[in-house]
Image: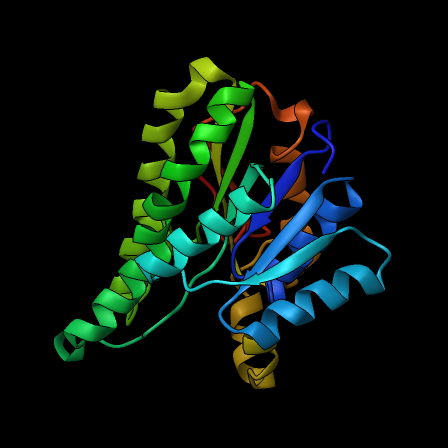
Length: 247
């Protein structure tokens, strides 16, 4: 691996927003690594990259498993891959009203959506600090600001991501490492594709641009924040929601 070629690591890259991000960063000229929870998902990421004539690979990773994260970090070291761009995209939902929410539903979401940032940022910051350059982009959600009934666990995790982002930005800014968040709104994904026409219409009534966002809308924002052009932006949350929520 050329020492001049930047490496990007994108978690949760087997589909949807994560897949769009890993492909976009590869098109930007980075060696793009995407993770999935299974070996089959990791293989699919590698196939998508190679099929598009792009350089990168997929790895299996459970971000909610400390040992899985540690194993990936060791594997990257062994293969002399030092990510200077980290996109924390992996996330889950376990929706329920708080009165009915189990401890497991709470912990699963916090472990995957929030604790994973600690587990990945801490070891990967060492390489960024040595290089005196780095980009961390954390994928939040409009729900972290708006809230949403039945998603106290998810909203808490996403609000936590934004606080984590601001605090870490203060810690590492002197090393030319930026830390930002991207907060998507209603995005066209497999989940929204299952909505009825009535449900879709109700959603669009709340969006100023009168359309759902695309995964490429989000990937474009991540691409910018991961670039040299975004060198003077840190500790910010970029809302990608078509006017659903305006700060």
